[in-house]
Image 1 (cartoon, rainbow, N blue to C red):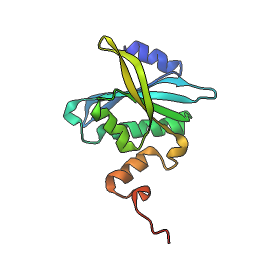
Image 2 (image 1 turned 60 degrees about the horizontal axis):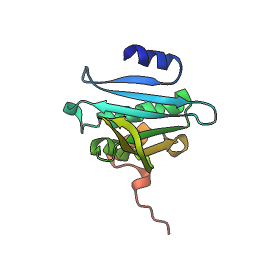
Image 3 (image 1 turned 135 degrees about the vertical axis):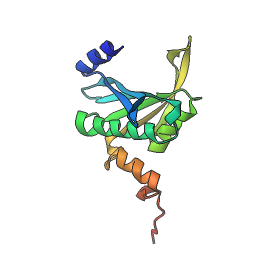
Length: 152
């Protein structure tokens, strides 16, 4: 697996990352399917150890990687495809403000069957301040977009 990840990364089609928390490996995140040209996009997949779930580890990791993809790598769009019943993974993209785009029927072959996936996406224009900054603002309750404004 490591050889495959390295080869794909070397070819510019994938960015594999490990996630450490308090000095130990707790997860993995990969930007795969990187496409250049007029598309400039990739899709993100991730997993995290249950012992750290709910602590903001995965949303922070996704935000850091999205910022890297947009600001350093030069991607325009990132997608995350999630099985509809995977509530914890859906919560990650909801916390970060990914836009839900729809359902991909029978999208991936998992556990012996073709499984539906919901598609969530972001483009660079949607997070001019950076996704990590937006995530920190949402966590602290200081998101200007979430604050009611007097328009009179």
